[in-house]
Length: 160
Length: 160
Image (cartoon, rainbow over all chains, first blue to last red; front, top):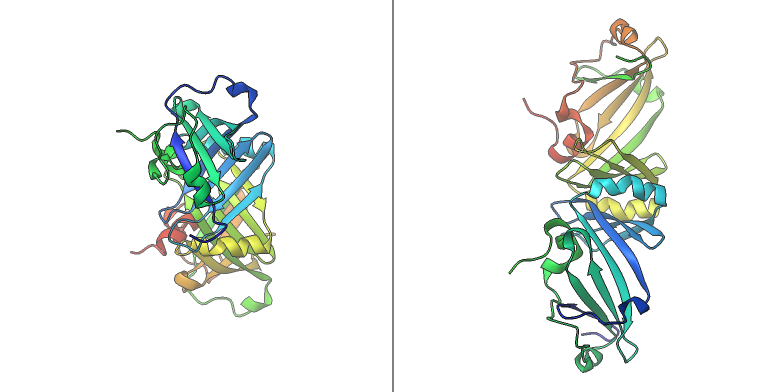
């Protein structure tokens, strides 16, 4: 692993959420897929607070491309209906977790109501190993494609 | 048919092209599909002369939505590789055809090399009926889905 590479881990949160959840900064995120091509090229729109974005991202068949295009609220509202059935809606909380880390706690709504995930980004492998998860963090789903945004939006929560 | 409704007709051009073709104004059009969803929602990029555009268009399942987002050349060049195998490249000539009409003559290149189509937009049904096609215009393919941009890009020229 090269120095400076980001290490991200993702967990399911199945226990009690922190009591003081609403004391932490948070924002609504609405993300919907306009279309996904057979080769994995995806086009999505996202509202995050007052920011609206259209993003085109290549699939595994291509050299990585990601273009984020800022759009205004009118355009977002016009495009959002086209994402019906291919959406993620969640509230993201930023919760400090020691060692200058913070957990992105995502509480899903809509079709994914009941799903809660936590993502943490580490600066190094050593930091990732030293990490002691808060008691409310559950099983590790890092790298589980079933919990990718695209899969959650298209197929809902993985079963089994 | 309501007054003011556009009437568009599309023809194949199978005979000799006009001798003076290169005397008419023309521009290169490169159009590629980033992704098309199962419900017909399509996202495409287009270069037309020096104009670059990303367009999102709804499919038949939705109330009609079409959003055109101007992009710069850098962004177009970044996204274009993602449209491989889903492209239309053509040169469009504007040719006067009497009665203040003009023909959009599209000479395709690349995978669709050899295909030539002509489109004419009329202001009224009366005008459409009175229209005498130039001798180089062939069979009428108006409304033939096989000659839509999306179909030509995905499946090539219709057979049979």
